[in-house]
Length: 351
Image 1 (cartoon, rainbow, N blue to C red):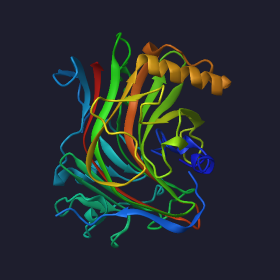
Image 2: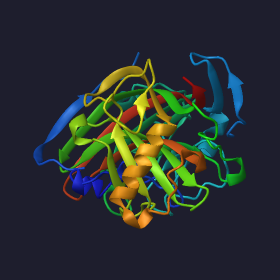
Image 3: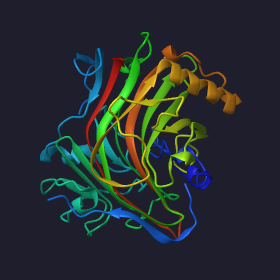
Image 4: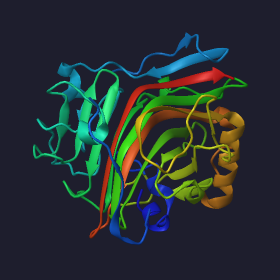
């Protein structure tokens, strides 16, 4: 995030993170000693067309279901700092520079992510043990970020982002074009390893990118799921994604809890936590038309220069979504974060 890092330590912009230039996403305590929150031992694509499904909601339309990734598809799924060229589900290692190339890693990142994958399913920027890594197999993704191995190419922010988007805007859904509908993203998540030294911060968010079809203004709506600083640090907040490689778009973000006016948890969802957890928990972030409208009103109040943005949720397309683990680590600090996700779903539903 990295004004966020300065403001929350400094500010939330980094919440939506640093995903990538076209859609790159978005923090500081004064601890001179490392705060080792947890380090658990290892445990012993295409965007589909919308389809109606039967689930726990009376009416649920699927916008996305995470595809199965085989061993042969790992290299096509995990990418470095390049512009994605298709509407496939990808995992992007952001802010390591355009020259960064990925290599096969033989060491097991499962000691940090608590995810075990077959040999050949782990990639990183170095073949050295314990360096930043991505594991991909089936519908599971493990992510290990060590801010020192390697350091970011620009600034202090390191996001690794499982994500998908609609590059063809004619296909991008209008989630609130029908009344009484909610937009939901759900997945299983575990964060077994999180440590930080000095001014470093580590956290996990999930983000929707909306586009106003009238004014063409784009904006992020973000939910914070894990952050050691505690949920009191993350009330409903308007910020700009203005860090070095950010999107320069407004970010409206909250913690996933019962207090937010801009989003809410699904009925069986886990809530924001500031403690690492080694077993999968289900998280579901839901947004109603009324909640998006409240966020848009707050945006206009906080950023008068963006007053052209429509207040009508029916005008907004969903153009992208992601799960965004990030480490913010300015020089002299170090952050490390290990997590895994599985079975990402994005749906429209009638509650």
